[in-house]
Image (cartoon, rainbow, N blue to C red; front, top):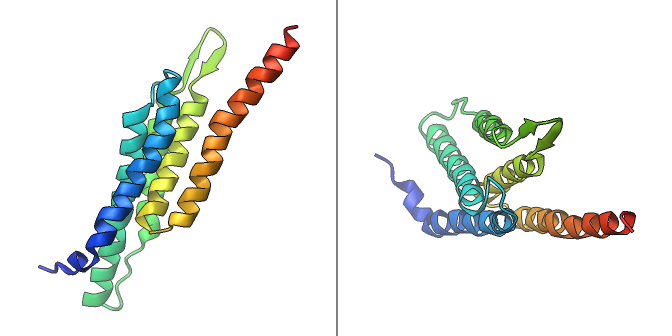
Length: 154
């Protein structure tokens, strides 16, 4: 059995840890607003996407080492992650009485999954930019919507 991944212990710790922190940052916002996919859900989605990506990259490394002509395609796993997260997010959307709720929650689940994939690939700068833009979208645009709604009601 090949334990070559043990040579990358810092990555094995840092990547999932960053994924948890990023998921918690987004999840905290959703939790404070009482949304269905809150802190724990966002952390687990981000962590899960990260770990699936890391496992895929390790599998690709081992397969190419053992069989240089191997046709292991990590894009297939990433596509599966995206599809599964989309299904999870869709479960948070509720239609009732002519209104639709949960679309932003579904979108946060989707973007947290993307950040988990980026963490799994070690793309921390991309993850940080995405997290910052997500926070600006959730907090800043919520504030702007509230300000505009208050002004319209006057």
